[in-house]
Image (cartoon, rainbow, N blue to C red; front, side, top):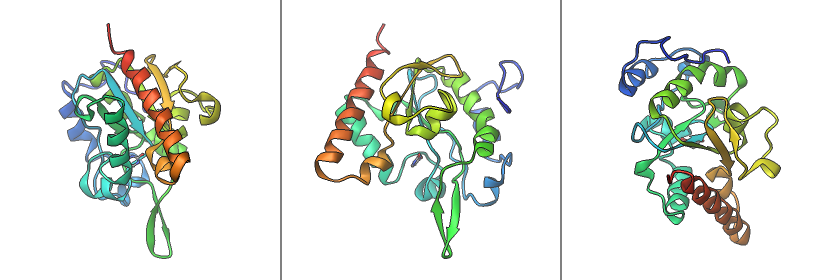
Length: 206
Ligand code: URA
């Protein structure tokens, strides 16, 4: 894929060197509207990598992934699955907020294919340095980029694939989707996410 980092191609020695270059990136037009680049965060190396769709307003303001309402929901599901977010590398398939102006207000939108391709250099570098045993995609957008363009949440969720990085990869629901549900529907989807994260966690043992 365009922009993929091949080992040895760049002379980054640490993830912090990658970050230093990524935070001034202008490989796509999102650099003109972002406040901050939202690089991945967590321990490197790490057994698990979580990949979201793209930063929202609060992430753009703070330059950190999943710090808004979706992040709080993610933290809740992780802790119910017995996982500590501090042990996981959390990132997004694009590192600048994809937004559109509606009635003079910036609203989140899904990232475009060319934005995902431009950000693939950083995705690939994060994977090289973090070296996860498993990758968990949140929602269909990162799953389509990492697992396959025809991925559909209805039948693909909870299954395991080799990602384009040859790392066991699965997909579960995006926490922002959970927040749009109410009552029993929300509980059911949260339970499925917990199952998916427990399964991912079980693959880290041994
Ligand atoms: N939604 C995402 O996909 N990523 C974030 O970092 C925040 C919200």
